[in-house]
Image (tube, rainbow, N blue to C red):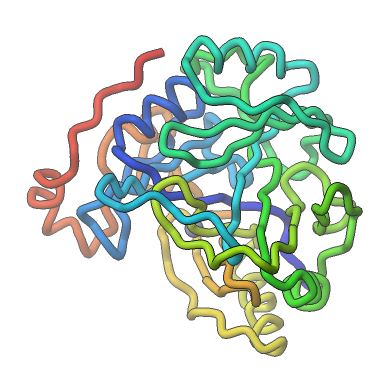
Length: 316
Ligand code: ZN
């Protein structure tokens, strides 16, 4: 049975772009691997942060919609993204985040792992998770990062989903996505691919009395799942269709190909191919340094550049 491999990227909505860059590149030390625009709203940036080479599974991306209202927490949304850090590194991270004035919550243990939850400058719930295994993705350290290699973020660990009806979502994950139930703890139910290694699972919670959540600054927009190539993508897409979903046609994002569909509770999912990757239209040594536009927007470059806020390198 064809299933997805794990998380490919997570996309969220941010406030002002410079603050987003200062936080994810400057404070967390990720590499800005692509500076582009939202292909449906080219007056807005689309910023991609990842490891040094932009490997699938390490990529956290943002639409900075500074004028948008804050998100409304509730069901039908992914409520937190977590990032994998090496075992023993949370002491380093707690003192760094404190020094940078980040709002942290008390450390937690989830399913036996050490977790440090915090909010980014625009309210997004993020957690750093000490994670042993990194077999599910490739990681290349970024030597331009302010974070020493031993402590650098290794990639996406997981995401949390809040649902009105647990069974609708989890039966979809089990049947259409071929996930396995990996455990339950404190109201959270873990589902993932295979054994559920780092980057290959989500935690789902039922909150039947919560309001419907709504996108806004500080919310996760969608979770993208990795497929090997276009043939794999089409096979998974067919399976979703057969299961009653209505996935979009394949959309060419140039760095990967995408198919979108909502899971039954309303969280937007995507299938994204491994390749060709962020080096396809930029020198890998200079990823993210200049504005990359999809070909059909090149003729509008001057106008687009004039409305996008100027970005300066993050303070480290
Ligand atoms: Zn996406």
